[in-house]
Image (tube, rainbow, N blue to C red):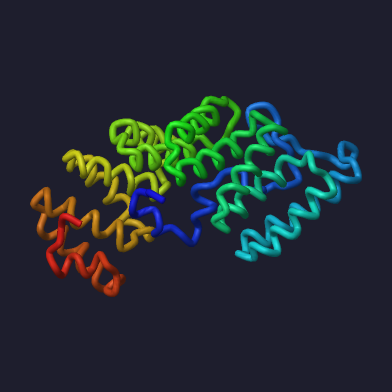
Length: 269
């Protein structure tokens, strides 16, 4: 599985950061363009009510890392209402976590068959295909989600699309997607990190410095971001700034591979 290195430093919140529509509000159904419509008691069939309760339980278990328990609740939700698109979507996320790509893809396909305009499902399915190196299919799904005026996850989808494009070697396209994502959500450190990394690799040092400094000057700095900052400041000839970042790296992440690379002077890693 080919991924841009550096994503994993947010692994603890990876699903929340890169996934969309993961049943955060399982009592809602997705309407045109992905806008959530609140389902009231009078709208629900008995089967949908039972399925919704099971989905709420599954979502909580999934967020707590109890994947097998979440899957069991989803099986019961879909037994109660096989047409519940949100349950198929979360089932896809569960199987992604279990590294079962075939069942994850089957789940997302079922969800889209029930609601073709669900931007969250399009996003999640696109990310699954990206991890399989099916980049053109992935970007097509991201594009469909982004194009929906009422979809609320454009920034996240543009970020994920940019990461996939960089993985595919489409540097200019990836940089453009990440820049658009940053314009919509300047507070996302993953976007800033990958955008800075892309700019650094093509030699746009001042702009790379701008984005990575914003991350490293916050409490979201990690070994990867500090290491990128060190390389950017070194390339710009800013020795004092480089040493300050190196001091943070060694104090906070002394056992990291980035700290080891710094000690070896391996600045091309």
